[in-house]
Image (cartoon, rainbow, N blue to C red; front, side, top):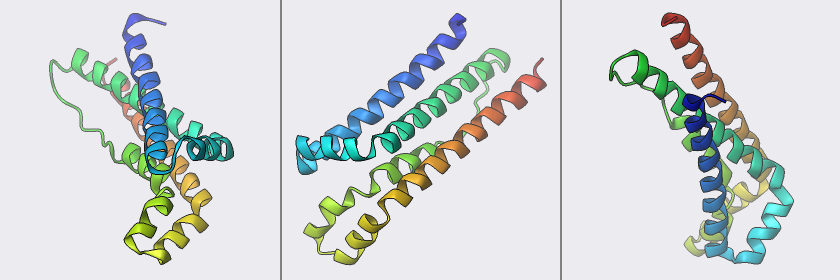
Length: 146
């Protein structure tokens, strides 16, 4: 792996690890370590997929930023972080189940709990969309600057 690709790769790995850290920290603070572990055990395939997808987006974004900085003499690139943010939100939205009863919004709690798996799938779809979007930007940028 060339030196100019190591940094984006490491940024992606770090982003995935940070997202998993946030997941475990938030759940532990809200409901305790045992609950965090049980939720991860039940939904690890969604949680890990979302974290890896987020990391891939960060890595691709970092690579695109490198390409733009190297080839455009300081011009900036506008790549939205909305997809990543929505993936993160959808990853954690079902944890409102733990907070919303305190606020007295039982209808929302029931809705979120009932559609927890669907929120995960939506998050994965947004991840794939973000990866395709940024990947397409990299391909188009390379074609224009070859």
